[in-house]
Picture 1 (cartoon, one colour):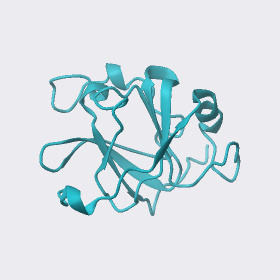
Picture 2: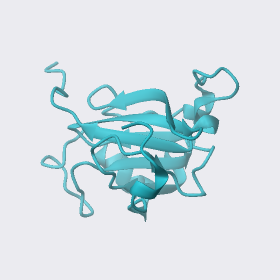
Picture 3: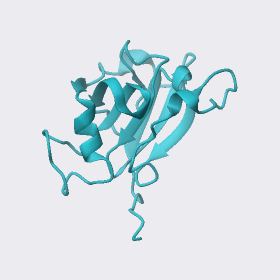
Picture 4: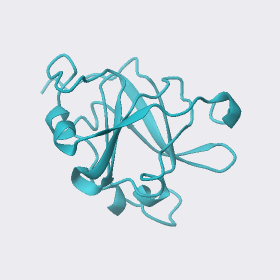
Length: 147
């Protein structure tokens, strides 16, 4: 699935979103906080660290489809947050989607806000400067820590 041809993928489904709206959703589920037409299965990316704009809400296919980030985010992702019940991988693209880092809820229920300062597994740059694509799937065992 990681190397499915680009021609088989649809156009990414995303829209701009205000950083303050993302911040209001951190650590909550869509059932607990439905502000701003919140949808299950969404992934949020901001160009700046700590939710610095511009920010975008993506509705990816949940079958590990390789999804390309828009031009404002390519090689410059500062923050990321995913809704519960999905697991995603940040990736780059070299004739196929190459996974860089896995993220999923609840591990990042508060988001990951310092991607420009995290080391990329490739070792050549920061994680946020390496990301051009991502993949997601439905998570069958993503549960919140009862603490």
